[in-house]
Image (cartoon, rainbow, N blue to C red):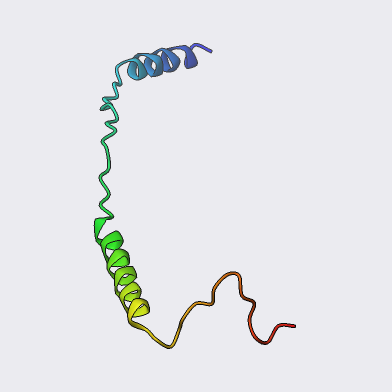
Length: 71
C-alpha cells in the first residue's frame, strides 16, 4: 500500500496539469444557387410551348364534345 499511494499521488498530480485547448465551432451559412437549372427548365418549356402553338397536327378536342370513337 505504501508504494501505491505515491504512484497514485503522482498520477493525480500529472493529470491535473494536462490542458486541452478547444476552439469554438463556427456555423456559417451555405449558399446554393439554383438559377441555372431553373432557367434551363423555363427555356425548354418556352421552346415546346412555341412548337405546340405552331403545330397543326396536334389540336386539342373541345371539352364539351366527346371523342368520335366513344359511344
